[in-house]
Length: 204
Image: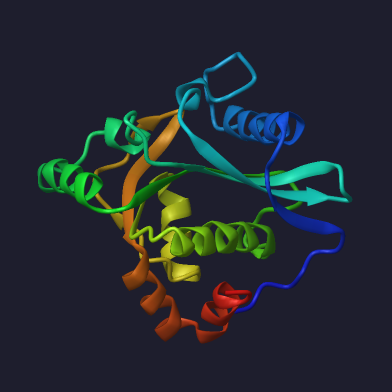
């Protein structure tokens, strides 16, 4: 399933203050709709973490999609603040200590660019994040994911995210801590959906 291109939408790594702030504003507006309790206009829990924003920009001005990727640092990853299963409490620490890891901490889409039949925006953003991860030698992604979104990622996109804890309240919504081995996950996509795998390879 190769996503159809969207008219007048380009996909960028956010650089500069204005685009970064627009990405944070879209995150905040989206999470507030899911009962995020913050009031500062941004996701306060992520302030201070080194990160990259991948953004979808409509008509060269309106940020309509964002994926935030947290990079390795002494601060670690926010997903490990969630309660993990006993097996994964130690396993996650070992992976983070010995492997190149990142965290896909948020995905936010403006209304009109999300929904069951509107996958293009999120898939283009994930492709950028995935290709950067490959170029950087990243082996694992951690991610806090809402249960229906995790189910959708696995069933529709064949993303091999594995739950490493039960659903629990995080940023105002039930959230499952998850992990994916990128090499194994891409092999899974290649077998299940070769067309989507080809899309993720484009430009490499």
